[in-house]
Length: 306
Image 1 (cartoon, helix red, strand yellow):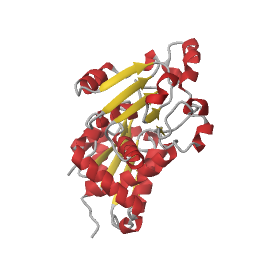
Image 2 (cartoon, rainbow, N blue to C red):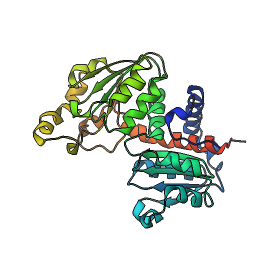
Image 3 (tube, rainbow, N blue to C red):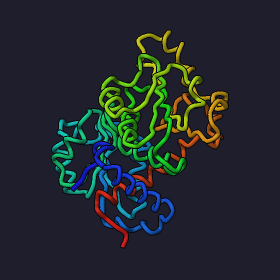
Image 4 (spheres, one colour):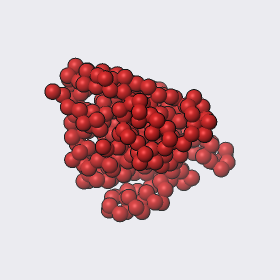
């Protein structure tokens, strides 16, 4: 029995196989429409989510399976003090596979050690978000045709953004990857990511404060929210916040084939005028997320089309 707790739980070969399966699902959805008939997915979401929870539910329903679960800790026995370990033991009696989102880092890993069914980490605190990473990789591969030899700009909250941390860890396994890290000094990539992941793998990267200066270099621009509450004073936030709002004027500085990704939700860091730009891929990204989660469910349940 396998789980997905970290994007590194799959080798590059296994990851490529998963993305191949997701692509086949995209182009031949009817072939997979009943493969999970009689199977149940439990969605155990201890903190709010729209995209991730509904994406998992849509994925299982598209496969012909069914879904049960809860959408907040308040509506579960966690409100009574039940541990994650006990909850997953109980849920293992009801479902065939579980997706868990939890505010505490490491909670899905704890669940996996006690579970009788495959566990998928649907986000744990500021730590990791592996299915978003799989979604990001499928989006890039589908629209760019490759996952190597890319210059990727990561912009916004790079300190607390679990999607950014997971994506960096996944992409360093491919050749010719370069990162441009664009953030205020208060929200730079943590030192452990720089030392243990980027430096350890001899990945070329640079840190900058302004987005405009590096737009022409990028193959991918991955936007994230700069959150006001992360700053020590409002004056500093006001000084910097407009530097990280992507507008159509900034898009004019970019390559014609650059892609804009965003894990969403968006607040104001991408102007709505950018939505109509053919390089804006963040809503396509959401659809790719359903295909990836369908492929992941099939892979962990070891189900194949007959």
